[in-house]
Image 1 (cartoon, one colour):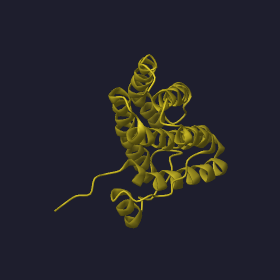
Image 2 (cartoon, helix red, strand yellow; image 1 turned 135 degrees about the vertical axis):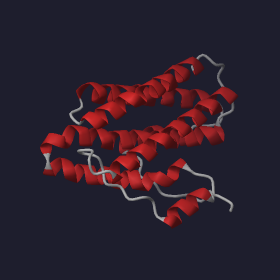
Image 3 (cartoon, helix red, strand yellow; image 1 turned 30 degrees about the vertical axis):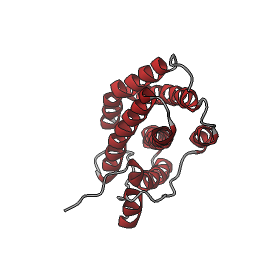
Image 4 (spheres, helix red, strand yellow; image 1 turned 90 degrees about the vertical axis):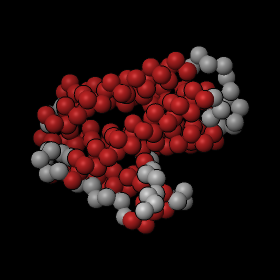
Length: 196
């Protein structure tokens, strides 16, 4: 049996659905709203990271930049799976109830067809700017966008791991921090590369 390659973009519709569900849960139970907001923001940040890294995978020139993009894609694939799993497990207070992406969406993504995903408005600015960036200097623009993205994500996960109310979500956020910090360090190191 031939298995289609997994694409991180296949999970984005499920994550978007989960974020919408979280917002409804936060209104229904204000005590869970901070953790619910974190999970929604983590979902948004993951979508932005995937979009930026996907662009860099296709357009970057330097091997080191492509390696960082792959590292971010791999990491966010794992994050998306865990976020989607959190949505299917009832015991985690404030987690989204996300349905898996439909078969048509997964098949389209696996075949390389474009799949419309929801990218948060703030992240969309960075993605749009990178998408429009000319080939000259693309690598430097990606590195700058990745540094800004990683700084925001690390701050978000640090705040949840320190201040979260739901013990399981708080612990999950703390477990993600080492990889996210490593990505930030790697992106900062690439800033010193010659411009491409």
